[in-house]
Length: 225
Image: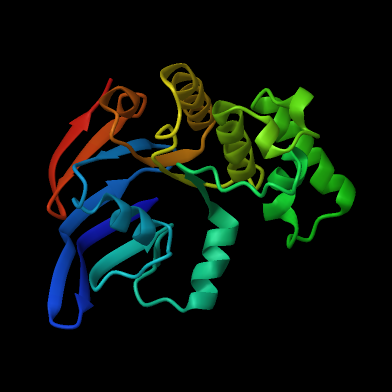
């Protein structure tokens, strides 16, 4: 699904140059669950932003579904993001003025679907995250774990090939964290690839492989059974 070869990312601000990623080589298979770990400043968020086509590498090759992404137009990148990618964030990023159903429906608004088709897809994914009895509630009426399940439902409603998750359990207690990780694992087993940045060694082990970053380099890869 993804091939990174000699990927570099350099940020330049005035006279200061910072290397965020340095000679990163990484392949991610279709349907894989990959956890990315490392200390703050190791390049985890930069890697996730490049994988999500929100940022461009300074040099090197990024191929997604056999297409060269480095240097692609913003229009093409937007197209690929809409068709194949979804994001889950630590802070949930739900709209307070919208209900659970309306938040989940947002990614479908600009797709060529009828209102009935959108409603059916939304209802299906809300049931899959066990929030059927909360569909008309607002985010502030939900617990943190429930809000993150809404965010996961919103990510899944478009049936993406890949979910990019940035510390999805970072704002949750241990019980809600386990529940969210169980959901991600279940959807991965159904075929959705996941790349997850996490500081939790326990949650990283829900995946198939752990990549350890340090100073912008991959220093270790750990295959899990």
